[in-house]
Image (tube, rainbow, N blue to C red; front, side, top):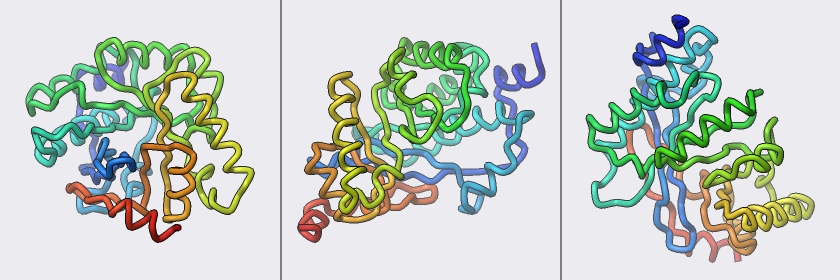
Amino acid sequence: MSGSCKDCREGAGFALPFSMAFQPIVDIRTGCVFAHEALVRGQNGEGALTVLEKVNAENRYAFDQQCRVNAIELASKLFEPTDNAKLSINFMPNAVYEPRACIRVTLAAAMKTGFPLDRIIFEFTENEQLDTKHLLHILRTYRDMGFKTAIDDFGAGHSGLNLLAHFQPDIVKLDMDLIRNINIDNIKRTIVKHTLHMLEDLAITPLCEGVETAEELKVLRDLGVHLVQGYVLAKPSFEALSEPADIKKLLKKAA
């Protein structure tokens, strides 16, 4: 077993201490929080880059494990026990050798804190070049274990439609570049409209991220989008949960 794999299995710590911020994903039909995404931050709230620039091929295994543990431990303190909001955790497929082995530290953190496994979503970005066969093995294993899965930044990376042909995750997050200025860009609106129809046919829930204006929000609402994430609703809060803006007021503003 390689040193990195041993670290992954045993949950060895990432040398640089770091923490998390949380940004809500909101169901705009009700204004309720569907999930909170855990986002890496420095120990004192510094931006994600201050941590991510320290991640390399030698320590990404330990970093990926520590992200999961930090997110679960913080969420267990912040989330209301009676709330149904889920926790969305980013993971690095290239930091997972064998999914059932590498999930042990995550399961231990959830058991220790009492955080329900059925409230965890694992999302990955398709910006990284991936071994599709390995990725599919991870996603199918996580699904078999009861976790929700999500593709982040859909439309901006390597996997895209080819991945969907082999595996249909629970959620697809449309990349923010597709959403930006969608209220004044007919081409983007057409692309998003047909992508939403495709996801509906595949029984996949769409989520639009990076929404920054009330006008973008209104267009997405009119297109039938339910789950939205972005600064127009709430910015990430360091070691805390953000309260979403009033949906009705935002839509009225954009009318």
